[in-house]
Image (tube, rainbow, N blue to C red; front, side, top):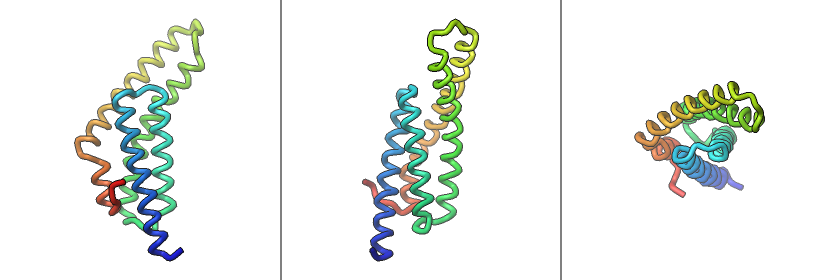
Length: 138
């Protein structure tokens, strides 16, 4: 495969991963349940890996900026996901004080996540990233 062919493939794959990520962010913003948060985290990891694998085809400063933003949302979703797992682990146990604390913490992180996603959406993050990476819409 020629370099141009590889570059075209990189652009196509990265564009697809960004489209999927944008959909997952929207889904998690609308209903931030355990499954939606998990799916979003998977999309973040896949998009980040795509940026890493195809780094030679994109502006380094743009990739660095995007990955920094992804780390921020990944930290928030990690905090939410960790509480979801702990709550699932507790199940119906009588540890009510732990359950309440975990639910309160999850709610706090979910609020922070919602605020971050609102700001990203207001700035049309996916269009800006698509422009910065010179990707075409899928």
